[in-house]
Length: 306
Image (cartoon, rainbow, N blue to C red; front, side, top):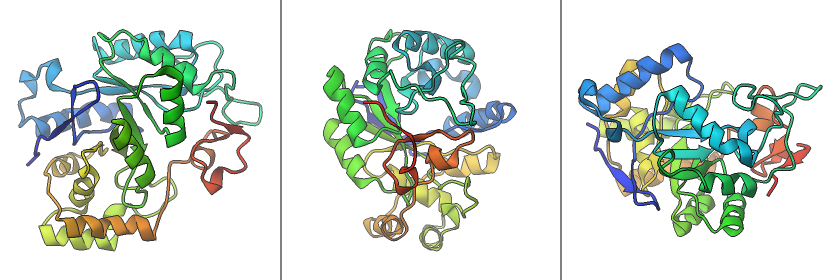
């Protein structure tokens, strides 16, 4: 069963450790998948749910980074979702796209060569400062996503405000130990996406990894359940995505790993490190920016504007 565990943000709000992600799900699939997740999480009592029973996170998109666009972007997001407030609102990436006209609809302004057009005269500190000024009745907590230690430190130094959360790619092949330790020291909550790896490169997902399957057999659990159990150690949240009802139900059946088995899963990242979400090589249209300092990004013509 779901253990129903929550942890505290630096705002004092409680965030569930096990959530549900919808990124890149087809619009027609999202509603059914979210309904299935709510049914499983709340024992089938969906009609009796109140807004305050559900923790909802959304994000500021890259074309909305100009400070004057940030508040309007939140209003646009709330209108689209039919909500009065978000529990957590995140800056999606530490990069800005140069859309001049409709920043809420034209999400990928393009250069003549087909790359996304980058905006270099707005810094991540400029955008974060605008986030910190949002109406707390509309965004109860604000944070970031895909930010490195250096990006986070720049935000804190530039505004004096520490993000409530940093949502990052993390899975057994991408441990991000230094970033995890930094966020722990700064009291920044970690939420993990792509928990099972990523199929953008046609590589096997981590649920197929021999070590994960070996541990799963010991607990009579699914490989996905083992990865999610590993992910929440340390007080992190994890947001697995699925549109398949049976898998959604399985993901909410939590298990707890022994220290020995946690370390066994951890060794995957020590021996086989890999980041999948690198927009310079993975995304179409390509984002011509070096975000994480990975070798694959060394030829990117733009860098994060701090």
